[in-house]
Image 1: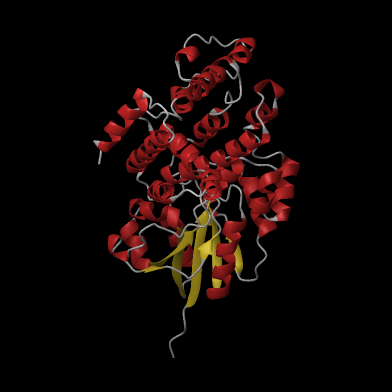
Image 2: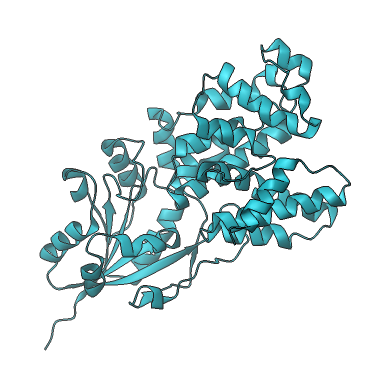
Amino acid sequence: MKKIATQIAIYGGSFDPVHIGHLQAIEYLSQNFDKVVVLLAKISPFKKGVVASDEHRIEMLKLALNFDNVVLDCQEIERPAPSYFVHSLSNLIDKYPNAEFTLCIGQDNLQSLPKWKDWENIKSICKILVFRRQQYACPFLNPTQDLSPIVFETDIIVPNVVLIGCSSSALRGTFGDSLKDFLPSKVYDYVVEKNLYDDYCQFKQALIDKKFHLNNKRIQHIYRTVVNALTLASIYNLDCNKVATAMYLHDIAKQLSLQELQTLGIDIAQVQQLPPPLQHALSGRLIAQKIFGINDEDILNAIEYHTTGRPMMQPIEMVVYLADATEYGRLQELDEIGLQKDNLLEIIKEVNNANLEYAMYLALQDSIQSLVRRKLSIHHTTQQALEYYKGKL
């Protein structure tokens, strides 16, 4: 009699940190497979790197994993970076010779699969399971990514479960009490104890600094845009530090008068030439330079043009613009005043479908329509940006 093969699910990632979305996936797999291998990556070839050390990430996973048939595999930590799944798969085949393997990923990683090293070999050995994930920017949206197996010339399993919409990069960028519900309690306590993920402390402190006069509503908006932007940064493989910095500071001057800007040592000559609704964007750039010592043009341009947009924006600029335009507080505002939100939902769909330029076109078009409805002037840069992105269709 032929021996029945052991069904093994392989679920890999940086787990930096491990969060409840990861655990939701692992719990599902533990209930539907004989064994689950949680494969800890050293540095993914498709990511900029990790923040927490290998030791911290291992300890957080040990604290989080409490399943009888789930094992933590750290083989990639012991190999030189970057991590290639095909090498790990070969070792797992040797370790479990009588097993059938299923590679399990989130839908945000789906598009990169054909770029994996030895993809043809991988798909001949493994079944592929793709978890859908709520879009963090708008939690009630249905998943929109195309999961068609035709693209990958292999069968794709899509389980009837939708993972909670959070990403490790977004959690790192806004870590604090407001996000403790997204981490297992023991992991949250560990992060606090070890002072992990505190890279943006100076910006978080700036939000509550009295000299910037930001009220609580504005601060909460900024926090939501940071989460939104870092989620998009993970989709587009952008520099999370640049994105988070620009997002934290994009509205830093929103509630400052010209006189208060002068008190901070900001030259207001250029700022005065702009219409009042646009002054905070340029002021934010100047504050980022003078007070925070930031000279990176990607960050500074993202701050300056987050309101008007401009032609030929860099990916980081577009992500900051779109994260600001689509944070879920804006959807709530539309609900409260009884306006249709179809345009905003369409923009969010295109952003999450990795179509940045089309999303920019839709967002700029929506912005101009809103200005026309309110009988407000349209800045020439916004009009130029719309024409530019219309030409990219």
